[in-house]
Image (cartoon, rainbow, N blue to C red; front, side):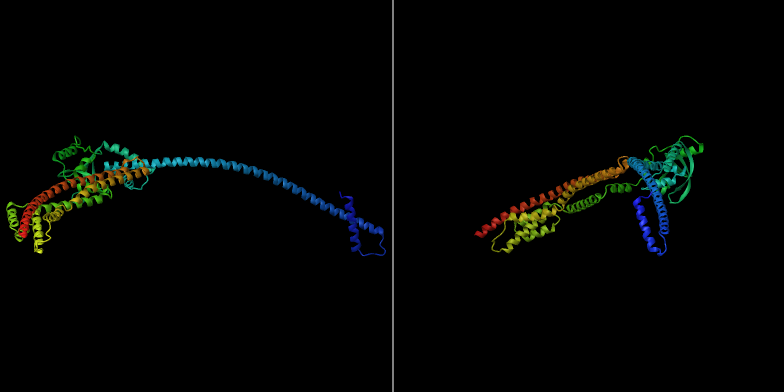
Length: 486
């Protein structure tokens, strides 16, 4: 419904519009005009009613839409809350899964370390019984296991389990097989062989019977020497009679390795196991050996003075024949005592010849001490170097021990203590360097004592002879001073 003020306003507007838009007619009556106005009012009311109806309809639609949107917003808010709860639950599950994953990764790492340690043991299985790779197609697996960075898979573990059962089966069999074996001439030939369990393999020929060993590249090699005749007959009788006793190597090839392994290779491997510290130790050993050889060669050339030569020297000294004495000593240059006496006489006579007035003649003891100092330095040459080397060698060995222990702890940090083979390198370095250092120091100390005693004997003789010459020169000098005073 339209209110009265609104009706009045609309009526006024309609009258004004009719008065402006409708031409005035002189004879138009108010009744006709009133009807037209009422008609316009009616039309305006209808239009207004329609507009308000439309507005009301749109308002109702908007209210319904707002209610729908509010309802949808409530549903979305509920959905968001649900998603938040689900997210929190998923986050908690993720944390639990991460924790479980971390624990499982630790277990996997431990399993991997165990597999690495078992891998060496399984690889040793093939070394103990080279025929395993011809039973079950395990040659490729053997090659893979020898690769340092290869990771064992479940398929490999199953194959290794089959290899273990094959090992058990083969361990109870004695069979005749054909194997490609390299002979002494380096040529590969198919040779009839007798495999006795997993202990050993005998290669048969018309002449002799030999053991077979595994060489480089998984090849079979004949041993260097035939087996004794009795063992050869036993093996051949076993094949001829299809049974009977047969010899076996219960040491697992250790006896063969001890007999046929080259000593040079063992020495090289022993040296390499000591690490870099072995090189300075080897240099010290070579230096000490060179000094010892040089000193022995030098001392062997030094001879003691004979009685006859010493008598001639003393006669020349007593008579003041300095040139004659020097010539005799020069001819006996192989003797340290002769060289010292010659130097004493030469120096003393030079002082007298350069001082004809007999003034400022040095003391005889000073001349003797100077000559002894020069000759003693020559006799004791390099002996102090031997003492130093004997002290340095054990210290270098101790340094290698410390380095080896550090390496061992580093290996323990990385792979743990599950497999002692990983620790062997550090332990070998720790022990071998100390061993080598002591092997150098002990002989060097003994050699130094031997050379020092040798030098002391020569020095003692030289000091004894020089003291006798010193006494004669002192007496001779006293006589000369008495003659000068007169």
